[in-house]
Length: 76
Image (tube, rainbow, N blue to C red):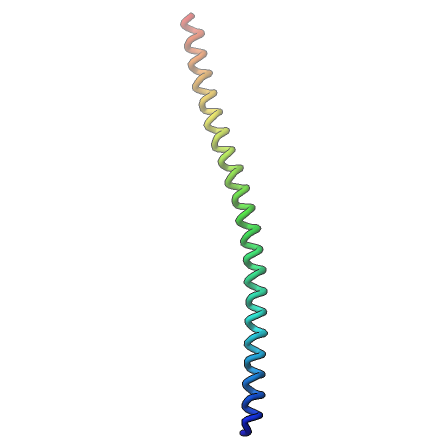
C-alpha cells in the first residue's frame, strides 16, 4: 500500500470517529435535558407531598383539640 492510501484511510477513520463523538454528545445533551425536566417535576411532586403531610398533621391536631374541647365542655 502507498503511504497516501494509508493516510487517506486513517483520515476517513478519524472523521468517522469524530462524527460518532458529536452524535454521542448530542444524545447526551438531550438526555441531560430530559433528566433536568424530570428532576424539576420530582421536586414539585415532593413539595406537594410535603404540603399534604403537613395538612394531615394539622388535621390530626384539629381532631385532638376538638376532643379536648368536648371533654372540657362536658365538665362545665
